[in-house]
Amino acid sequence: MNVLGVGIDLISLKRVRKFLRHPKSQIRRLLTPAEQKRYLAKNLSPVVFAKLFSAKEAYFKAAGGGIPVFERMDVKLLPRDRFQVKSLHGLRSAAPAYGCFFRTPSLIGAQIILWD
Image 1 (cartoon, rainbow, N blue to C red):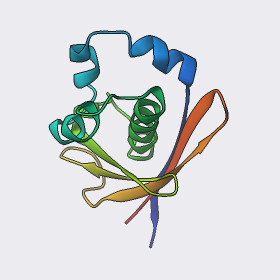
Image 2 (spheres, one colour; image 1 turned 120 degrees about the vertical axis):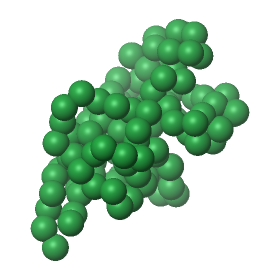
Image 3 (tube, rainbow, N blue to C red; image 1 turned 45 degrees about the horizontal axis):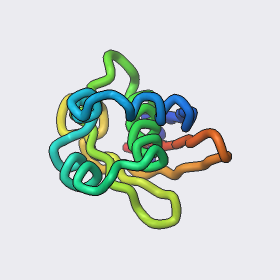
């Protein structure tokens, strides 16, 4: 097995709370249709949105950068502060990748390693 990439991201919960005041259309453009069903149907909390956003950012960095296309990265939140990301098309790894979250009272972070 070879490491294809490593990605880490941190986001401020204060910044997320501010962003979530935008219209839902702004938020929807960052989520896949499946994520919208899973997470927008419920009241999207700042912590859940921060986890989704930081997981996508970490995956994007691990996959090699370029222009982020968040609606092409589907995130599933898993138990014990873990997550799965699947690239819907166009990014380096077609297989699901798994990562984990870490947090402080004011920050949420995600880390992921892509393997071949």
